[in-house]
Image 1 (tube, rainbow, N blue to C red):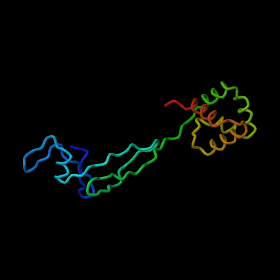
Image 2: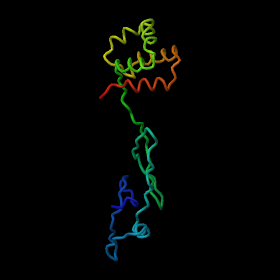
Image 3: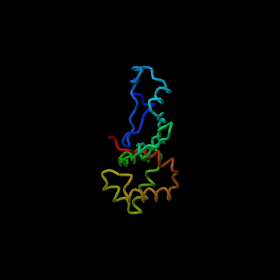
Image 4: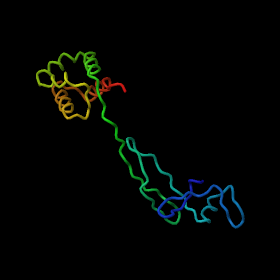
Length: 156
């Protein structure tokens, strides 16, 4: 099979064979001119998807010379991270932040939720609210939050 040349058959791309059978015989080292003469069109290469996306071919466009795959980019869905309470406390303690965060959890009423939680999912609405409130209260930068959370991900 030669993936550089093809034709559209019933809406699907059919790649050219590696060897062409012509009236003159079998052509093993087929040139571009030979493929074109036999009715095969050049297939434009598919570029890699952008970071964070996968791709799927949703159809084809073609003219007298080339076939171009029409790409659909699909975001890669990452499952939400689950954080370990022990790792979270450890990461905050290493930064001398745990006493202040612990007091704040108690003041705001989030302490009971923290104690009751078996694990903490980043997509949970209470976690999102508490994280935003803590960031506002303590002035944590996005990089500081990302570092603490990266150290707190539950092992798989």
